[in-house]
Image 1 (cartoon, rainbow, N blue to C red):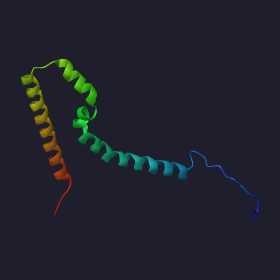
Image 2 (tube, rainbow, N blue to C red; image 1 turned 90 degrees about the horizontal axis):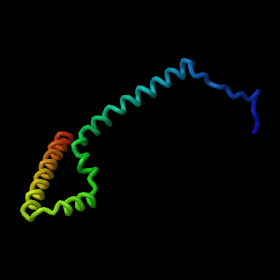
Image 3 (cartoon, rainbow, N blue to C red; image 1 turned 180 degrees about the horizontal axis):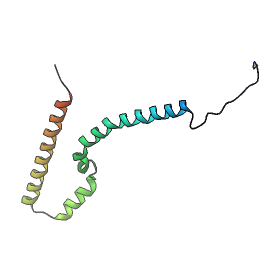
Image 4 (cartoon, helix red, strand yellow; image 1 turned 45 degrees about the vertical axis):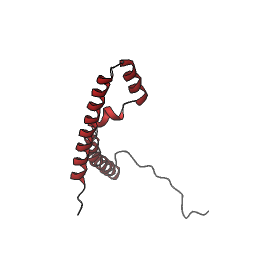
Length: 101
């Protein structure tokens, strides 16, 4: 490997105009990228209880409840109605997001 002239590794200062401009550009791009990510996260906040639900714990608590058959039926119907409502809300959100021609 041959070098023409004296090899020189220049350091770049933290407060040079080019570095400051590049830093501001990257900061601006990251902040703009976070806007849709936050909006997307807000859309799914209502699903957090379902997503954080541990099925084994739920079944164990349900079994410990020792409900009568009628109480278990009412809880299941209530849960199914909640799921149906959430499904409807999700479908309405999807229809708003996608236009099908």
